[in-house]
Image 1 (spheres, helix red, strand yellow):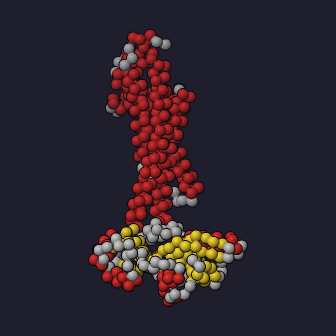
Image 2 (cartoon, rainbow, N blue to C red):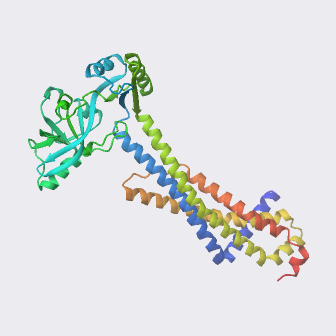
Length: 397
């Protein structure tokens, strides 16, 4: 056993004995460390799980979907259904597509008047948007100009609440003054960030029936599903190239799943930094508490420090003694805080209905915080103890 190992072992034992001897005072400092560390760790777990849940929910809507909006420097794009068919056949990597015409409007059922979003779409829109029919059926291209409508879940619920009876297939509603027959009701669908639509508060009609309720029937949007072996960046670039060659005045706005995921990740990172900043403040306050405890310990142990110096202890030995005391406090507090923060993160995830996935940063960050706080707030009391005058320290009681 080396002398250096023996010195460190004895220092640790003495520090642990001192910790027990003054555990009442140390407990107050420990509580601060536990709360500060737990706040930071819980924040890490919460922000990590919030991001994972957001990406998971988004992935269920499909990461193989591209939303295309078409504008023009001339005002109207003059992009037609035939143009959409040609583009889909010439651009590689497109599995299916749906043209979309969107317009705000009103839906009336008896005395109920409700604002809604009207979407005129092709039949493939339902599969591309991952929307499911809860009751009835979807609208197909073969329905042609028939005045059929599929209601979003929230719209159907509002009608049912107002009329005190559920919406049935074959019921008549009025869209923009035109009578439509209900043929389907969508199941609850999460808002789609790629297609930029909330289907729960929308009504869907056939693309060919758009002229019944819309004045502008130019194709302004497309929902595109890419092939399994296609690269969304390559497909997006080819779409832009095709449109620019078709008509230089066309201005495409392309939204991909990867762009949305990157946006979610960036937003959650900012949110995590904000919460970490708040948690770090409590950790900073707890560090001040540790420094106060250590300064009091220096005053109480002046005579002991003088004896140690008199029998040969160096200033560095005294620094190590008090720093190890500070580090033990921080390690114990960080360990308990790590467990408490993880339990709190799990509890928040359960309350939110999420599956809990611990952040990989929690453990190393918990250890790093304990070392940094212990060293930063313990160094001043340790140096102060090492610089005490030996004679004056021996005279003190």
